[in-house]
Each structure stands twice: as structure tokens, then as C-alpha cells.
Image (cartoon, rainbow, N blue to C red; front, side, top):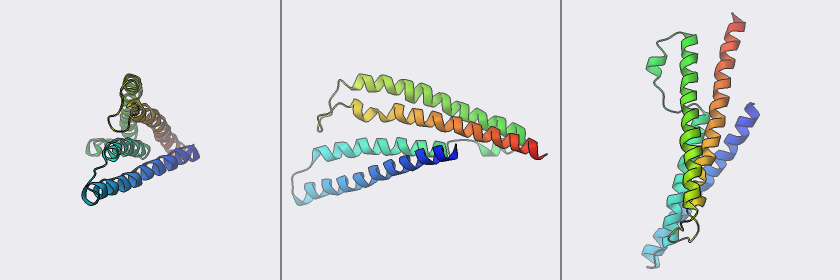
Length: 162
């Protein structure tokens, strides 16, 4: 299970890193064309915006993998181990539901709708850039399931140790 998680995370880190490097290069290109060549590149500015959205959502999936998503530890730490595990699982269920309903279902809806609209500078369907929403929703759902398995497995291991 950890090999599967690590493989997906490695791919996500690579994709987010490539997106960041591409953004830096394209931003440099924008500055060069605007101030040195005096002929601004409009397509690169648009692409940087879309790459930023991709990088942000891929990064959110990495954060979900690491269980770094929003929580309130001061509240959870006041309870004993069993209640902490229940609250941790509840947090993962909320993240799972958000991922499935908003990112996957909503992402498929908006991606389908946006396939009929073209980007202004690049001339390709906007839906191609929205595909990241359901993709990250699926990844987040997988990660939350793996996180819940890890939480419950830790609880089982604690019972066996006693």
C-alpha cells in the first residue's frame, strides 16, 4: 500500500515541479518579450495562469496524502487515543466527501461544459485545463481512503500491543 501511495506522490511531485519550472520559464519569456522585444506574448501569460491552477491543485493532493489538510489539533489532542482516531477518521471522511462531490462530480460538470469554450490566446478548449479538478478529486479520494486505512491500522496495532 505504501509503494502505491509513494508512486502516486512521486508522480504528483514531478508534475507539480514541472509545472513550476514551466511557469518560471514562461514568466521570464513574458518579461523578455514585453520589455526587451517590445512585443508582449499573450499566450504565455494565459498559460502561466492555467499552470498555476494545476500546480496548486496537484499540491493540494500532495497535502492530502501527507494528512496536512486543515484540522483543529488543539481540540483533538484533548481526547484519548480512541476518540482521536474517530475524529481523525471523521476529518478524512469530510475530505473524501468534498473530493467526490465538489472536485469529481462538479469538476466533471464544469469540464464538460467548458469543452465548448475556447481560450482567448491559446485557441484550445478551456475544458482541457479544468480536467485537473476531477483528476485531483480522484487522487484526493484515494489518499483519504489510504489515510483512513492507516489510521484504523494504527488503532488495531495499538490494541494488539496492549
